[in-house]
Image (cartoon, rainbow, N blue to C red; front, side, top):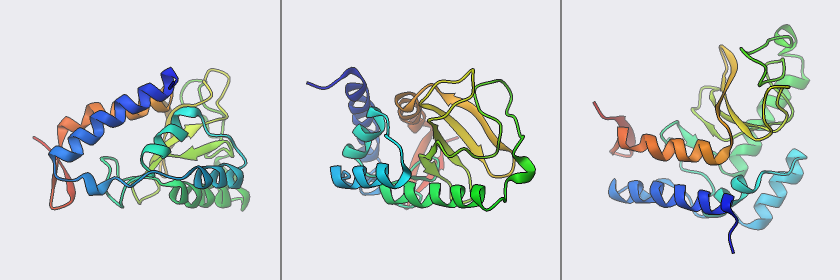
Length: 186
């Protein structure tokens, strides 16, 4: 029997898949990740992903490049690559001049990037939704924040991964897929 979290992920994906099918774009979302891929991701990152994220990866291991309304829904390998870039920048000292950056409110820890952050999607330009597993004092473990490479982290934009996925599903009506590219409807 599925938990309430898993059921909410299934419901969101059902809605997303219906939209992709209606657009003739089901090929843009990838097949499921294996349990081995998910375990390898968690081990490589040194974290345990929330149930909703693993349930989503078991449904679809991301999207093709540009196959998601916000760019690319990251696969296990994509998450590992994207987080690796951010962590490398953090440990190399590239963010030392913004280590005291504080987003508005207390939901996020100070800094440009945290080791407990996990990229969910990416636009190819250094921006995307990020799962926050190490929030500030006013935040919640598992909240989803926005990372903009120019203006820094902000949010949260969703209280958890289910909220993120549900918000994506709700926004799909504003888009159409034309020649494999998302077009915002006027």
